[in-house]
Every structure is written in structure tokens, then in C-alpha cells.
Length: 357
Image 1 (cartoon, one colour):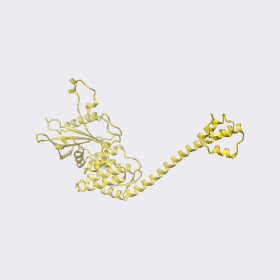
Image 2 (cartoon, one colour; image 1 turned 30 degrees about the vertical axis):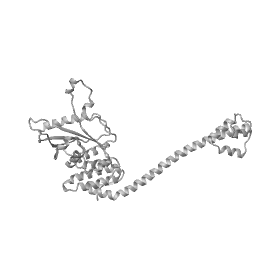
Image 3 (cartoon, helix red, strand yellow; image 1 turned 60 degrees about the vertical axis):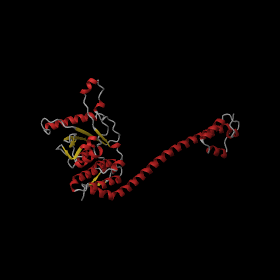
Image 4 (cartoon, helix red, strand yellow; image 1 turned 180 degrees about the vertical axis):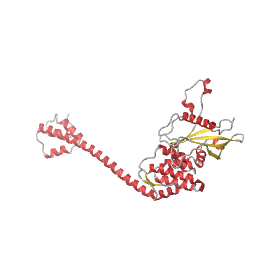
């Protein structure tokens, strides 16, 4: 019997980060990320067929934590038609708030990368340090406002000190700034991933999964299909379907079949829940409106009782018709009659239509 998972809580930040590391450990996804989202002149000179992950560390299928970000390298053609390595540093640590000093963090990470290259003797003796590019993937709700350049964080310095100041810039991919319609028009694995991040309903998820099943149909892409299935099961579906029991799935086709079977059922449940919430909200609004109406009615009844006592003290007991007239009057009319009773010489002057001088 297939094990099922009841999703009662949102995935942790560590699960989300680690699942991204698992996905971006696949060359196909990094290739599409560079091809579709890095719009720089130098990106056109990259030989994406030479992409390789530098670190020997990896994220296991059960999404265990690790501290390292992902480091890839790719050959680039320079102006003399020679190919040199470019190191791509992927920062996949998503945060609930924007880190103003991200440029400073990137500088520290790149320095550690260079030290590691020297320590592990990956660079030939006497060779210059290779260029690096840092890419920060951000999926927070608020737009990214932090400087992407280190110089913007530093105080102004005199011209004779500028040569001694560090300079660094990173590439920001802010998912909150991406338009779903533009992502949907791209045959791109990274765009599909970002669409899943933007999805709000099971139907949205199903559409992207259908596309991924077609795009990842080759046998050598089995690992990436499993990575997407694991991410969907542990990260995406628990958020989109809180409280729903989700079966364990290791293939995208299993996710596709499950969504096809249950989208209609889940939609009906959502509609019922929405109706119940609507009824509860309507009841609450009705109670509030009734309370306000009751307060208004109570105030009018109090004003009526006070005015009747004032009139009877001055003119004697009122007949049923006059009492009924008082009982049906609104607050403004009662105020006018209350002012008149102070100087009126008869009931006619109190209830007359012509104001008294």
C-alpha cells in the first residue's frame, strides 16, 4: 500500500531551500536559468554544453540540510576565440525579508570560493583567478529593494581613495517581479519552476506538471523528474492543499495522475469551504448590523419615552393615537417635537408642521 502524507503544516524554510538545491543540482535546470533569465552580453558567449557542478557535495533525495550554496562553472569564449572558465555562484537561501547587505555577503562568499579553489589545487600553478558571477534567487512576497552593487552600501570617499575600495555586483532574479503570463510563454524549466512558485490552485499546478512531463520525457532526465516530484510533494502541494492527504510520489507522471483525479474533487471542496466561509462572514456581518440597528432602535425608544413624559407632565395623559404617533416617529422628528414642547401652549403647537418662533 502506498504511504500517504497528511499535510497539516507548511514546509519549513530548510525544506524549501534544500529542495531548490536539489533541483539546481541538475545541469538542465541551470542551463535554462542562464539561457532564459541572465540577459547580459557575456551570457551569449557561454558554451552551456560545458556546464559542470564544481562542488562534490550534493543534496540527497530526502532533502537533508547542507550549508553550501551551489557552484557551477562553464566555458566562455573571449575575444581571441579562446575558452576560459567562468564560475557561477548560485545563492538559493530564501529569506522572509530582504537582506540589505546581500552584496557584502556575496563578496565574502566569492572570497571563500577563491580560497577553496586554491586550497583544493583546482587552479593550475601560476594561473590567474577566474571570473565569478553570483546569482541570487529571491522568492519573498515583497519586492527586492536592497542594492545589487557593493559600492551603494559604502560611504562616499575622496577620489584618491576610490582605487582602494572593493567593487562587486550580483545578478538578482526576483520572482515577485516576474509575470506569470511571460513565464507561461517560455519553454524553459526554470520558468516552469517559477510558475509553480506563483501557482495558487491545483489547476495551476496541473498545467505546469503537464508541460514538465512532456519536456522531461527522456530516460536520462529521470533524476530531474524525481526532483520535481519530490519538491511538489514536500513543498508546493502542502501549501496549495492544506490538510489534504497527499500520497508519496517519486515520478512526475504520478503527480500528474493524482492531480487529474483530484482537481475536480478539491475544487468542489474549496467551493463548499468558500460557501461556509461566506455564510459565516454573512452571519457575522448580519449580527453586527443587527446590533447597530438594535442600538439605534433602543436610542429612539428612549427618546420617545422621555418626550412622552415631558408632554404628559405639561399637557396631561396622551390618547392612543398620539402615543402611536410618537412611537412611529424617527429620531430627527422627536428632536423637533422635544424643542417645541418647551414653549408650546398646546399639543397642536407641539405636533404642528409649522415651526414655532
